[in-house]
Image 1 (spheres, helix red, strand yellow):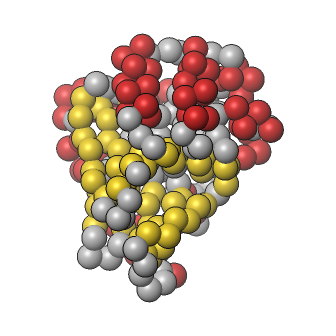
Image 2 (image 1 turned 135 degrees about the horizontal axis):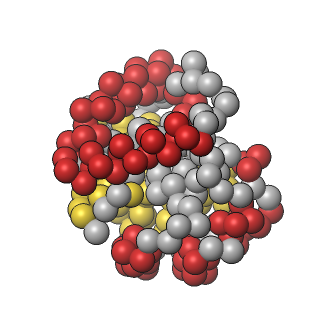
Length: 215
């Protein structure tokens, strides 16, 4: 049993064939899939338009893997309707799996930043931020996320540790920086965008493997 966990693809109606082919391969190779938030980009698109985009060809594959869909801050539950069923069996803000005496908690991670504004930024700001991120990732790869997002991951860890229960392991997304900190039971699955893929694989005994590759 192999579980694929990925997040932060931020898909729009702008179709990327290389990304599509990559997602198709890693989803096909998994027994189960957990999409850990920000699968599509509601700050730019309407749900209707996303559903009718070429990305819809991934939906039957996701459905066949009994996909668990966790809402993020860019694809909130309020941005969608019942048609979320076309690509997932379970859709929720958080999810748990029990393996070998450990409780694995899946959340996007935005609730660990309680001071964040609920209002999305302007489309102009969002576009500039995405363009800058794309440029930096093309040159520096994961190192860019490490520099920018390590403080964010550390803040998530601090917040998680306040409420962590014994034998629990949290798996988040949101910051775009993939990391596994086994000492405290924390991991982040990173992002898959801009030609860089960060994601996690969990085997049946609970071992988590971080994957980082270009596509």
